[in-house]
Length: 111
Image 1 (cartoon, rainbow, N blue to C red):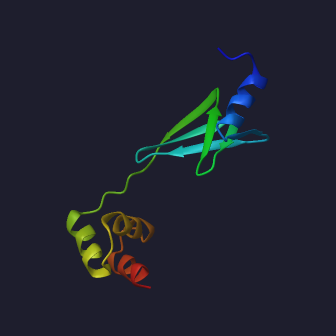
Image 2: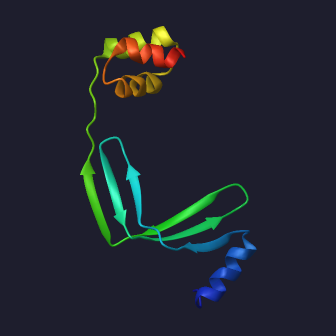
Image 3: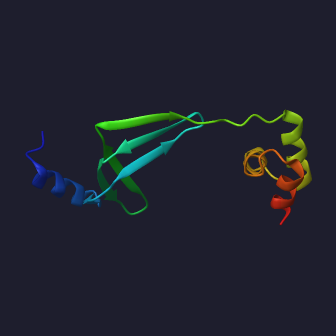
């Protein structure tokens, strides 16, 4: 078992991780396909390694909001994919940004 912060820091140093507390973080937003989580005034700890960074987020105040998921016809998505030669995700993103305008979505992907 750990004997406090000092021993934990020694262990992290041996593992090659640099740990620091990020001060003055106002909020952290986590977005999923269907909702957004707002973590208000969280405590955030950043641990940097050789090839990656780990963030530990602790929050007591969380707000959850549902996201509007745009629904496009399958044939519209396929048409944009074929005409712009892009993946499904890029086609949906372009349709979302163009508010469903297929011609504008194709043009934005072609340029």
